[in-house]
Image (cartoon, rainbow, N blue to C red; front, side, top):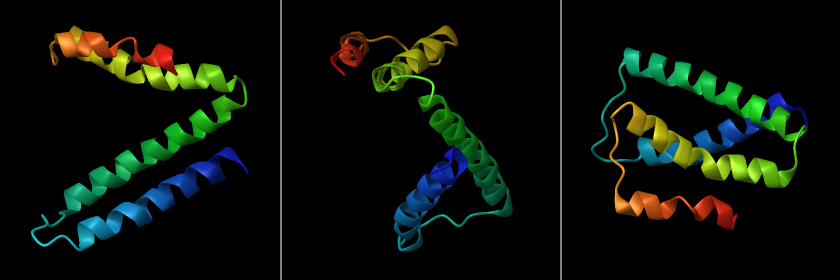
Length: 102
């Protein structure tokens, strides 16, 4: 299966699973035209991300890809700390060794 086809299938499946939760919620916030545009824009980048991720898997081992995915939250935390958006707490320090358990 091609990378784009796989990425589109994953996004379509996720949409079909999540959309009913929004549609059948009692007190849901209605979506404005701006919200729909923003979600479409973000969805496009999500598909692009999935395409490149799937293509990249062909050039690496499963172990390397698992480590890259597992260290993602740590990298995000470090960027957030560098931008002063997140504090480093003891609990967050304890979570750092978790990617090595993969």
